[in-house]
Image 1 (cartoon, rainbow, N blue to C red):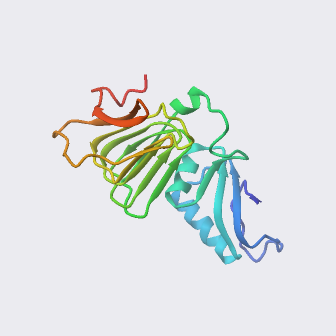
Image 2: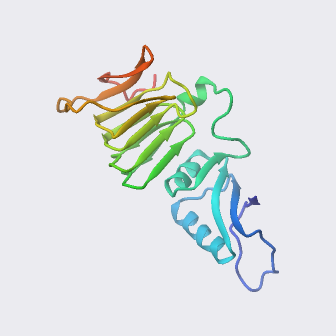
Length: 204
């Protein structure tokens, strides 16, 4: 495990530092790692023989960035899936801007509002609800820690696979009415798809 509060110095003027090699977990605490900085960090770690396999951060936006890059992202010193989760944690909403393309995987430790599409071959997973302001045509897994009270909502709901908690379903072949958002939730132990509430993006 590598604890980082400031960027790694690579200048020859700095005294030599001994780092672990191979796959590592980076603990970034409250360091605000945006996408360019994280790319730079990954490259610098590689020059020292280290592969960032996992990131632990206290900042949700940093965990989102890491997940988008395919890095396992967790809260600092805590697994994403705890034995019990409070309603407040599940109702917390992280907003992610951008379309997920084939091969992308986004894992969120709370609920998520995605401003974009989920294309075939992409995966979006959240501990809480999944709200998509766009087309869902990939795989979506709400309540990924087992919470079957969660739901999946999209402006266009035709994914390859839906999962809520431990329940799995495929979407019917019939296309939804144009302009009609749909939601998937568990009713009587199976996933059912119904028209979404007109104010589905309201968290209250």
